[in-house]
Image 1: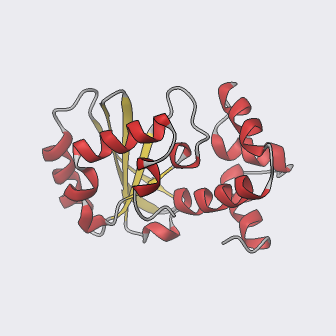
Image 2: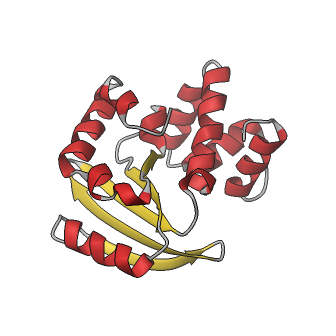
Length: 176
């Protein structure tokens, strides 16, 4: 479901706008070697005003990736590049604005289908599909400023680090 942008093409108005922005910018074509996957709230239709487009990628050579991001998107509005470590892995993130969307391009040396953003999205999609009314509850919490994973954990009654707790829930329940 999440391996292509085709679902966005026929989705909600905001999903169609996201599809148009991503396609016009050419992110998936320009960065195809990194197997980009759109994650986050927009593909799940739980986005709120200001939700960004999170695109994750598997990147072995972060220095080359950093130079490529700078060359492709460095002149776009609000462009910023950040190098950090998350869960013992080096990460390069680029953020910028394009067509009323904030883009976040996230690269790390890990297959996209093993990255937390992807795993969380798979779990969240399964929960949204199974539980009537969950989408509305999540959106209400997000409108109050609660981040996505903490919102799911609050509704599920999960405690501790919401990013780890949601993964553990997904594993225990055979979702991932």
